Image 1: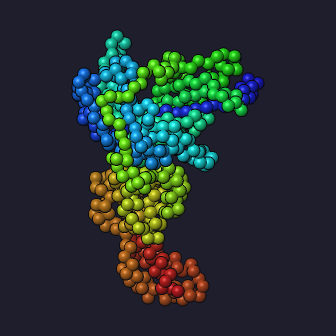
Image 2: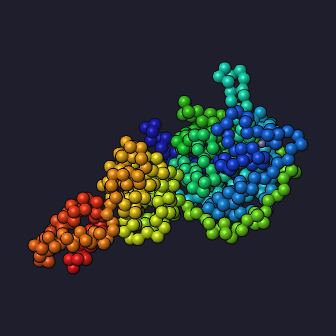
Image 3: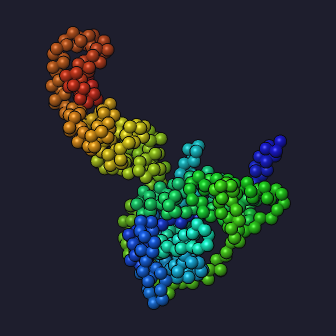
Length: 485
Ligand SMILES: [Zn+2]
């Protein structure tokens, strides 16, 4: 009975969720100095200078690449790119913030509005409206000693360009929140502007969660859940927090506005601190940086034309243009490696013929469904699929090529050359073989003319035998049928 009661009460409440996502941009240098943007690859504090260490008398310089990438992203998201934007100081003290303030954007963000769309598990397109996207700088990193007696600080990350995206409070369940984060990650990665690994902390998600009685227009007390460091945790923590808040309300407890963290061991959220309000940060305009007017820096009309469709729309384009299966197209537009594979493949075949499109389909499904191919690295996979797509080798030769690549340490094209696997697609060469076979099998030809189509298969087999199995079966069939008509 307990379960049934709980189900009923959950049904009486609606969760309201807004997401905040920070993502480091993959620029060469930091946001306001010329230090390398390489928070992981170097010795602690190797990529630092007087400016990102917060020394007095230094002056920041805007990294225009970071601003431009944000503008590019803005067109993908359908946001309004600011005519005029400025920088603000967000003041607070913490050992990982040597300046004592973070340069951010307060009232005039670079991007406003826009939306991210994706398909939910039922295949319906969901649209999540965005409030804003702004640029700021990342903080350093504290490394706590194992004995908890001391902490070390690494400023390699201090000053790395950081993009903050905020959604409208329009999400109502954990699964949608997770899918939103995954789609945003792919949009960033597809542009090549961020690596956005959740595991490495290059993308960090926070959820603002409240619950209210179904039908209520007022928002409940908002709780911010931080440190959601994987997509799985995004979903689990939100699910847990919604249940916790409903249970509290049902028990007549008052919820407090606070920041909570996620305890991976206990699989629970836990209270961290009472939420600061904006006033606590004493935001004021950054006096050392000029404002930015994007239209004076770039031709925005050109940028607007370079807009990338939402991933679900790009999948639909792939389906209609190349005839790929829906699930294959969706894989190519949700995983960065697969997307790279696909875009390189279609670049090789800029204007494919119908036959090449057929082979492209085979190559695509080869990538998705053939485990043997997965042992190759990405450039080798692309090369192999390209050989299939161009008709150089047939699908049945894939396994042989992969084995030789692994065993002989050659590249796919070298294997095809060395082992003489090249499929015969040259129509005049195949036509010559077809003519020979037709001349030698007059009785089979008579049978076909008498309506016995089974004999066609026999003739195809004879041509393949003469070609030692290397003739492109599609081309053989086509030429045979033309000759027999
Ligand atoms: Zn620096």
